[in-house]
Length: 184
Image 1 (cartoon, rainbow, N blue to C red):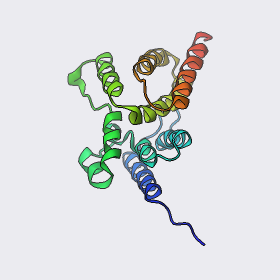
Image 2: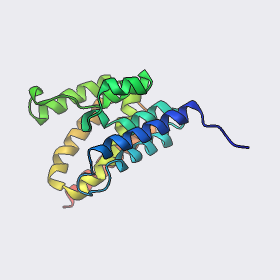
Image 3: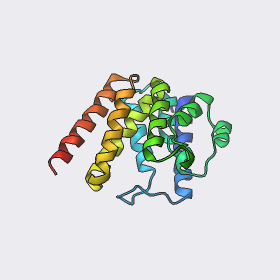
């Protein structure tokens, strides 16, 4: 007897395949490691699945969370292929502010304000994103990590929704990273 996949499982698999193709199409690699970029969305999706196992729309958004800001994929294309709730999460997670907003600090302030208003589902994916990015940045670029960790702390202070388990992990990863940088 075979088990048929649920609609949620099909959506997650569609998101995985789509994100893999989108990041691969531009040859995107992980900064510092030069591994295929899709390793990052895969890790974010795994964290989301672990902490929210009955929320396939969050897992799908985790797979797709960087396609708008990093690839040639448009919001319109996502809207044609994925449910509206998934696309809204991806939009909420995407830093689409251009140079007209100002320098990095100004862009990060706009991003923080957007994420603070985005709600628990978007914040859930963002916690997983922050957790996965932190270790790599601290290990491979301690100079930038000092800036990144200040931005991460501000984000975590502004985000007040999502599962407590992921929120605690995100805070723990920040505190461990700060301690590690303090020892350098």
